Image (cartoon, rainbow over all chains, first blue to last red; front, side, top):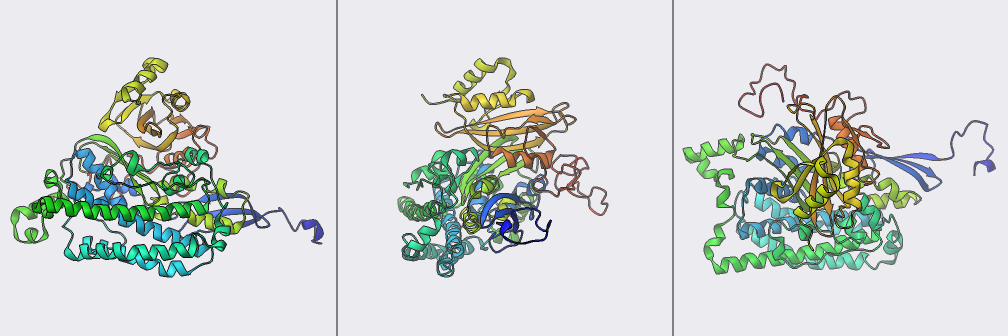
Length: 410
Length: 172
C-alpha cells in the first residue's frame, strides 16, 4: 500500500499498525491488555497480557482459616460468585467426608443454577451489545436483578455473595425467598423468549457472528477449554454430568452443544443452557416440595448434622448463650478439625470447570490451595483464534469468550 | 471395559516399571510420582496409548515443601480421560537449586500459560517452553512469591503477635 503514498524516506518503519486493546478499553469488559498488530483491518498477531488485578489469593489462602477463604472465591468470577462459593464448600466437605441431606443439595442446585443464568444473561447481553444492539443489554439485564434479589434474600448480599457454609447454608430460605424464586420461574421464560426472538434468527446478528472467531474441537481440547466455549466447539463435556456433585445426578437435563465453535455457537450454547438451568431450577423446587410433603420435618433442614462442628451457631444464640459464642469464635478463628490430605474437586462454573486443588496438612489453614480458573486457561487461545480476522470480529470474539478479569488474575 | 485405577497402574508399571513411585488414591484419584527427567515420556505415553487416552490437561500447578530435602518443589498435573471419565494426578519433584522440568507445551497447547504461572510463583524452570516469562506478577520481580520462605506479611513487624492466628512464626 505504502508505495502509492509519497512519504519521506524512513518515515514508516513497519507495515503493520499496533493497537492496544486494553488494559482499560470498552471492548475488554475488564482489566487486561491485548497488543494487536494490524495490517489494515486484519489481525496479524496478538499478544495478551494479564495480571493487572492480581491479588495473590492463593498466597493469602495459605494463611487464612478455612472459613475465611470463602469470601476470596467470590472475587474470582464475580458474575457467578455463588458457584465458586459452592465449589469451595464442596471441596472442603469432600476433604472432611461430610455427606449432605438431599434438601441441602437441592437448595444449592437452585442457587447454582440461578447463578449460571445470571452469568449467561450478562455474557450473552454483552455479545449482542458489542455487535451494536444495546436493547437486550438494557432490558434483558433486568432479569439478572431478579436472581440477585434471591441471593440477597438468602445470604444478604448480591454480587460477592459468600453464600452457604460448610455443611449447608447459614440459614433456611425464607418465605420471601421462595416467593421470589417462584416469581423468577414465572417471569424469566417470557423475557428469554423475547431475547431469543430479537437475536437468534436475526439476520444482522447471524451474519455478524457466524463464522466469527471459530475454534475446532481438537484445538479447544488441546487448550484445555471447558464450559460453554468447549461445548460450542462440539464436545459435550459438562462437569455436572461427568462427575456429578450436589446431587446433580437426580436431575434430567440436556447439554447443548455447537458445531463450529464460533461466536454464534457460543451464544446459542449459553442460550440453550439458560433453558436447561431453568428446567433444573423447576425440578429442584419440585423435588424439595416432594421431600417436604413426604416428611414435613425436612423443612427445617438446611445444613448437615454431620457438619455441626463446622457450622456457625444461630446468631440469636451467639448473643445469648455462652457455648454458642465459644463455638462461633472457634469456627471463625479456624479451629476446625480438618484432616490432612490432598483433594481436587471441580464444579461447572459459569464459564467452565472451576477446580480447587487443596493440600491440607491438618492445620488451621490450607498448606496449598490452587484455583483452576477456566478463563485464565482458555484466554491463552485468544491470539490464535483471532489471527487473520478483522479487528471488529476480534472484539466480539473476546466478549463471547466470557472473560472475567477477576478470575483470570486470581 | 471400564478403565479403572488398577488398570492404569498395571499399564504404567508394565511400561515404566519401578520408575513410577508413590502410588496412592486419595479420595479416589490415582496419584503417582515420576522422576523429573521422565515427565514428558510418561505424559506422552498417557496421551498416545489407545487405552489410557489421557488427552485433556485439566490443571497444572506447583507446590513447595521446604522440609523435603532434594525435592523441595513439585509440579502437579491433573490429567483427564474425557471418554472414560477418569482423572489422574501426576507429580514431579525437583530440588530448589536446580528446578528444571520439561515443558508440556508440546503435548498440550494449554500448558503454556499454566507453566508460565507456575514459573512466576515457584520459579520452576520449564525446559523447552516457548515463552517462559512472568505472567501475573510484574516483570521486575526478583523472587518467587508462592515459595514458603516468602512471607505474606512483613515479618519484622513487632506490633502484631501472630502466635494465636494464622500459621504463626516466621517460617511461613
